Image (cartoon, rainbow, N blue to C red):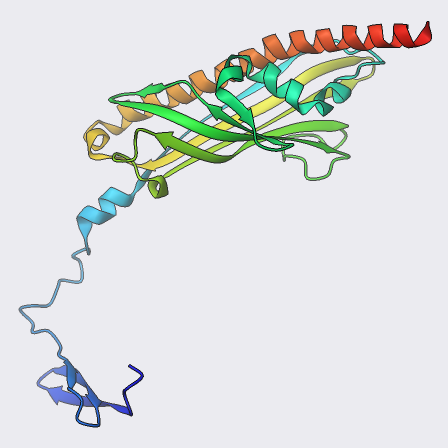
Length: 259
């Protein structure tokens, strides 16, 4: 295009149609763009690339769960203090992943999850999980009250679906996990509260596109619910057990210091 010295647009009326000529000087070839004939014109009601439109419409599924159970805190070992030790909290929340996880930095861990069966597909997710502590009501998730002293926020920053590269393209799949965990104190009593939400969205591969939508949705939401129910059980079980251990360790440390 840099060789073009000058161009001109010349409208030419031809019956009830127009055509535009793009003229190029200095004896360069002449380009012309002609209007289509009536027989070639596409109906205005006919959609373009119908197959592609159907193919790129993503299916979205989500599941959400909450926990709210009694929490027995000790004055010298508050749950807020326990949350500061993020490696410990991570290992308590994901006790089955010790051999399949690695720490990436201060806040993130990479987890190779166990295979997940979804109808005809077997998914092997690899996720990067981030744990962050927030205090003073700053940047709290919307569902967390502003008077909560400390919140542990978790989310996925990166994901990979192994063995599915030829079925689902990375650009056609998204995974979102967001959660929060905190101690809600009212007087001398505390409760462990938290929320976890998981969302997936992907363009259906041909092997799934023929399955009725209600069947796909029931299976997908069942898989998601099972995953976050498992995380809830880890919080209500192994995390609280480890917090009890943390309280004993803190109490023993204070005793040793006072001797």
